[in-house]
Amino acid sequence: MATTTRNRIVASTAELLRRQGYTATGVKQIVERAGAPFGSIYHHFPGGKEQVSAEAIRTSGAEYAAVLPLAFDDAPDLLTGIRTYFALAASHLEDSDFADACPIATVALEVASTNEPLREATSEVFTSWQEYGTAYFVDRGVGSEVAAELTTALVCALEGAFVITRATRDTTALLTCGDVLARSFADRLPD
Image (cartoon, rainbow, N blue to C red; front, side, top):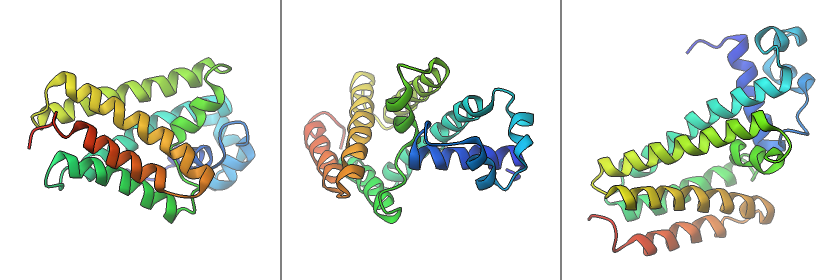
């Protein structure tokens, strides 16, 4: 995809949301990070910060869905894939000095009861992850009910472990979640 001013604004907003949340992210900061003129944000996003943030959430959500195949496609089995999923997240957080977690959860926790458009955007992403993950695991031979449960457990455990890992600056919570989920699904997944 060509890097347009609009795309740079969305990517910069996503990065800022990951690192500092919605309230701490300002329009001036977004355009400076994007290397864009100040007026360009309102040209591309007449709704301003709220509109570009909702777009960044949706775009990031689609990008984060791509992590699932990265962890599972090359794994020798689904249990190894579960552990790899959490290990990749732990590695990413360590590599970013614990700054780059999930912008969807960061924003959802911050504004879910105060900003309906952003709550809706985060809800759409979580729903899309549930649908994508369930279909992904069904395609790998997991029954639909177990696939839905596994996807819910992966997302919930990952998002919760992100919060703890960022606060403690220690990846133990992520790695523990991967191990516990793998053990808890061991007798429910195909070999």
